[in-house]
Image (cartoon, rainbow, N blue to C red; front, side, top):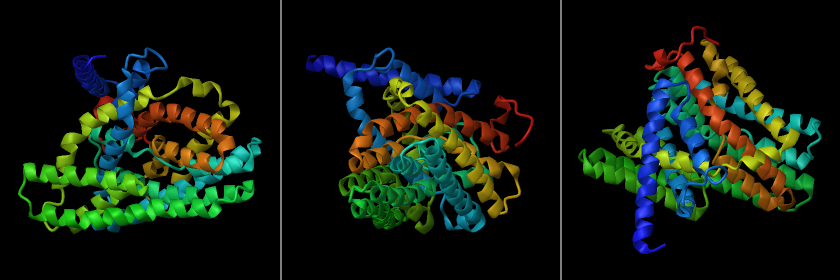
Amino acid sequence: MTHPDLIASILLTFGGLFLIGLTADLLGRHTPLPRVTLLIFTGFLIGPSTLNWLPTFAYDWFPILTDIALAMIGFLLGQNLTREKLTTMGRPIIGISISVMMMTATLMFFGLWLLGVPIEMALILAGIAPATAPAPVIDVTREIDAKGPFTDTLLGVVAIDDAWGMLLFSFLLVVATIVGGNGHSLDALNNGLWEVFGALLLGGLLGFPMAFLNSHLYPGKSSQAEVLGLVLLCAGLAEMLEVSYILSAMMMGTVVANFSTRHRHRPFDELEMFEWPLLILFFLLAGASLNLSALYTVGYMGAGYIVFRVLGRIFGSYIGAKWARCDQKQYAWMGFAMLPHAGVPIGMALLAIQQFPHLKAPILAVILSATIVFELVGPIATRWLLIRSGESTRQTELDFDSKP
């Protein structure tokens, strides 16, 4: 392909993808399907598993778009962890997040073990299962304009979910290496701790200068350059330091939201202006990367993973809501809004494969097949529960009369 042809192909591809995103947004307003599910499904249709319409360079861009999109999502999630919100909702956020994590991991381990899955494999999948994909959850809340205590609690739970999940995954990976006799348990623990606490340190170091700049810059182009520059800088440094770019960006957003003396909401508002076009590309290419053949190879282990993860999230949120003394019934069902599962779980699977190369095929088959199911069904469940909570201003689009 000549240089002019390549440029034309790039422009036509991304122009078409943005228009597909516009169509998904319009359909999402008039159907029960969230635009995230529509985008992922459309990406799957145009991807190599079906129509294969996308040129190869689009897949080369996907890792970069993933880092940028998830760093933006992490930064935006940070604004939900302010002192004010933690004072009023801290008990539900902590209680539900920890309970969902522990119940999901416990049911996953014992359920798979009883199905005959090798113990080290059950430990690894139990460590991966609690992770939630934050991008679909936060996009669904925006799409239906959900605002209120339940939505704030959900976003707070999702914000700290990856931190708890990475610590648990690191611990269970250590246990699995001891059980499997691989001899690399200390390395696994050190890597897990560094990925979490190194990310928090990086986010804090960048967050305080950003909070100062945010308080002293005039509104307009300067604040747009500030937020884009620092979020991208955070993602790049996190990649270099091999720490979680979601957690580092989330920590930076939390520091900005808590320590800006003025205009604390401005950087988040500015970033939202750039976020949706990038997420269109992210969700479409995520759908295109799904491989349907994974569904045919997992058997009972993949089915068990999906069932035990759903049950763990539902029972976990119920127990956590009871402990936190949440009066509203919908809090007990919050785990149903936390089904999306991609990005971070795939990264965890790749880390586990380094320790257990002989388990590469079954681990990837289970995680990739679960990703297909949860990325298509998860946003629908999130939207359904948010509308039933009564906190969506577009609640009349769907008719749900009863509450859980």
